[in-house]
Structures are given as structure tokens and as C-alpha cells.
Image (tube, rainbow over all chains, first blue to last red; front, top):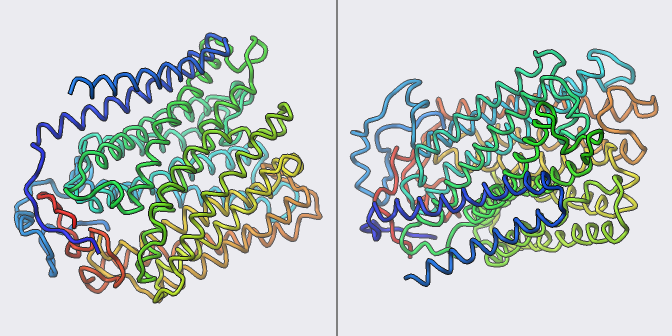
Length: 72
Length: 536
């Protein structure tokens, strides 16, 4: 049984909002890459474009994530 | 379910801060529902919307079944029949099942993780209110020149490139519903990652929350792909491009690849939340913790990942190299492993439990039984040479209705019965609930089990007429469909009578329930967990 007792908030509301916004923007950018990527891949007609978009997206998000943590 | 009272009920468990609920300022009447940013209100809106769409899609299905009662053309012409099958699929998938799952997420995710609401409350409102407009577009397509889309819910090119104005409305509706889904998914992921109560670590989250987290990631990945595909379809139709138009150098088969890259994960988008609901109900009525919690999380993740590499099993007859057929066959069969882990864990959760069989438990067990059958026929269809024989027959129709009706829908019924006392503060009529289960169970099988025989005998799907040797089982299926449809009116009556005049529900009506929402009073206050609870 999970039990619960009221606790003071451990994260200020503004900081929590900013963190939520960051997560949302990352997720939105992933959706945008998939949307644009599939059209770009078909538009260019080159078979490597689709996998290229996906590869750059994965590497790009990875680099941004690592970079943000390195700054901390 | 329809209304959250503004005052506290008895049994107030943990949070005196809710006392100010009585002073909560929000509009009443219709404006409450239009402007609401409360996750419970929005969850209610999603669930009622999905029920209305379920009834509408069901009416289309009954028209289909009525036409198929006898061989020959009876009540609709073939073109309209194709529109019926197309819109039935689109409405049930995008209008009924997915919004229902989001409705459960809206209600339960914040409550189960100790969050006060969804992370983006206004966006949550917008996510919902896009849906009725998409639904209107879909239904309006019946009345435009050329009629509604008639190429099947898969919208395959080149049929969809050549279709009338109804296809444009369908494409626009899909764009809107896709945007709604993506916004909803962003909201759910952010809520789960960022708004969990102190002490609610990821591996303490209820399995329903886990399944929705994974589902939301799937949605983020594949809904934009579908949006991209229908956008290209739109430009092929109106702006002179030739993405899928062979006459202009395009590739119609590529549409199928892109569509199924979305379409197969979509199957899991529809079923994973149901897994979460069943994984919540079974331990409660077995009075035992869920067996193999961690393995359930890993199995769900594995299913989600594998769902990205099996899409071409929908396209074995299109033509592909033998190596491709083998890859997609074995990858598809591999999904049976994590799915088997889940079924094993569900059964083992019940093993030697102090089980009782209230309506939610009946639906959960019904789900396991029928979903497993649907899973097995899926394995049959995964075998390439068998699939080539059964492609586009009623065997496929039987398979995916066992997975999506007996899977998703049974779990949703179970979920409604399980949480309705908490949502509404009132108990439903248990006897009628059990009647609803048994009628649904019996008529579901009367409807869809004969379709296996029809498919094996070679009856093609999406046809308004058929050879006379298929008549008997088609008659049985149609009678079953009417029974199944009428049984759902009983569900409507049970829910309505519960909300209006059911006896008051205690804070925790189910002895074995152990998730966070049951620490709150019934009915739930309008605002919950404004002060985050600490989880021990």
C-alpha cells in the first residue's frame, strides 16, 4: 500500500515550470524532426536522407543532452 | 463521472489543504467544460467523447453487418459500404480508443503520481477541444461530393490520391487529431517526469503510469510520421507533387511503408494503456502485489521498441526480398516474448491470490483470455506464407478485433468500473455490471469468432457482397454484432444511474487497491495533491 503524508514542495514553482517547458520543447522538436524528416527524405528521393535525418537527430539530441550536463 | 462536487465527502484521508475547494472559483454550466483546465474535468470530457464516438462507430459497424447478413446488395451501395468500413476504422481508432486512453491518463496519471494536475493545464484543454472539430470533419465527409473516404482506414495511395473531397476532410481531421495526440503526449511525459511527488521514484510508479509514459513516447515518434505521410498525400492531390503518384515517378508502395511505420506502433499505442489498467485491476482483486513489476516495465519497453521494426509484416503480399520477409517474420514473432512475459505475470499475480470476481476483475480476466487468443492469431499471421494466404481475409478482421475490442475495450470497461466509485463518489450496480460483462463477452465471441472460419475459408474483407457458402457464419456474426451493440446500452445505463443515484462509495471500495488515489476521499475533491504527498 502506498502511503502519503503532505510534504512541502521541494522545487520552486517557477523552476518547475521552466523544467517542464524544457522537456516540452525537446519533445516538440523530436516530433518536428520526425515530421520534417519523413517529408524531406521523400522529397529528396535519396535513400540515405531518411536514415541521415534520423542519425543526425539522435546524435544532435545526444550532444545537446551531454552538453547541458557538462555545463552543470 | 460527469461532475466533481465542490465539497468534500466523508473519509477525507490525507490533505486538509483541500478544505479550500469549497472556495474554488471556476465557471458553472457549459462554460465549466469549455474553459476547464482541471485534469479530472478534461478526463471526463475525453471519456464521454470517446463513448459518443464508440456509439457512432458502432452504428457504422452495425450497418456493415446488416448489409452482410445476406449475400447480395441489400441496403447500401458498394461505394458507400467502403466509406462505412473506412470511417468505422478511423472513428474507432482515433475517435474512440485513443481518446478513451487519454481520458484515463488525464484522470489517473496525476492522481497516481501525487501531482496536482497535468503539467500544461491550458494545453490539456486545447488538446481535448481539437477533437470534436476533427470528428465533425470526419462525419461531414459523408455529405460532400464524392462521399467520405472509401479506401480503407490505411488511406493507401493511389486510391487516396484519386479520391474525392471527402479525402481532404479526412486528411485535415487526421492532422488535427495528430496535433491533439502530440500535445497530449507532451503533457503526459512532462507530468510524469517532472511532477511526481517526493519519493515517487520511477520504479515505484504504478504500472498504468509506466505504460502511459511509454505510449506517449511512441505517440511522439509516430504521429508526426503519419502527419508527414498525409501531408505528402495532400500535396500529391492538390499541389502537383508525385510522392506517391506512379504516373509522376512517385512510389505508392512507399506510402504503405511510411503508413505502417506509424501503423504498427499505433497498435501498441492502443493496447499499452490497457495493459496498465489490467495490471492495476488484477492485483487489487487478487489481493496480491503485481508479480514481476520490473519485468513488466522492461517487457512494455521491449514491446514498444520492437514495434518499430515489424511494420512490413502488414505488407508481405506487396512484394519484398525473401531476406526482408524473414526479418519481419522473426521480428514479429519476437514480440511474443515480452507479451508472453506480461501474460505470465498477470496469471501468476492471480495464482494463489484471494480472488474475488467483481465486474472490473471479470473484464480484466476476459481481457487476458481474449487478448491472448488475438495474440496467437497474430502469430499465425506473422508466418509469411500463411499471411500471404490470409491477407485481406476475415481472419485478419477477427484477429485485430480480438486484440483491439477484447483488448483495449475490455480493459477500458474494467477501468471505468474500477475507478467510477472514486471518480463519481458513487457505486455502480454490481449485478448489472456483471450482466454487462457476460453479455459483452458472449456476443463479442458470437460476432468475431466465426470470422476466423470465414477468413480461413477465403472470404475477403471490405466487400459488401460474398459467395453464398459464407452466408451462415455471416448471419451468426451479424446477430452477435447486434447483441454486442445493445449490450453497450446497458453500460450507458449503468454509468448514468451510478452517477445520478448510486449509493455513496467509500474512500476505498476495493480491499486490495493500493495506489495513491485510494488515499483520497470519494468523490475526489476538485483539486487534489496541491501539497505533494511523500511516498514511503
